[in-house]
Length: 237
Image 1: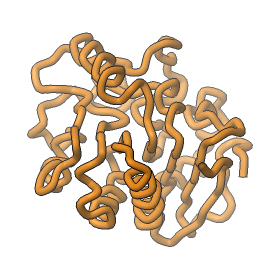
Image 2: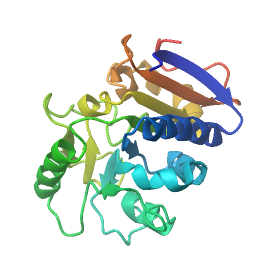
Image 3: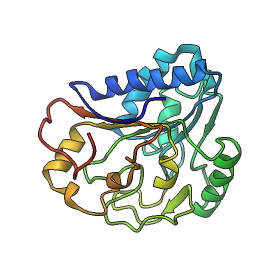
């Protein structure tokens, strides 16, 4: 398995992410597995539909979940799971399983308890591939700069006071995201604005805590070609 961290530049970072994501997942399927994939909402979700198209019937082998979810009904435009369903990602064909981080009517505690159990039983406590985006304020998943980190042992956390509405969210933790063998971070124009406004100087910036240590992991950070100058902190690569 490849290891190390690479910076990539592309005029269409989301299409480049789809190409890499499909390759990682196809290789895992061909090795006889049922890959465990976590996807974002927001602009980075634009990489998922072309990934599914590239995978064809291999999409049916994927165990899918989300990196975060707002505590809203699936019919809401703010719902990541609802957006995925409306984009046709969950049927004809759908993935082998889809684990929503929030179900309509759940409390935050109920959602976290259900997801912790499902990630242990259905995802074997790890991910194969994590696709991440980054907001203009520097957040990754629903982990925000200067917010108190979730408990060290948690795989899932309930966010009760998100700086961006809606306030309540369910998020995978950095502990769990760091189990992924392949991590793809798509840094589009929102990243450029974030870098230019100085969020990257904050010690609590979530991206600083993604595991960049050497090992059997592949981390690709895909930046919009329009930005050739701004880096968040002193990340490897």
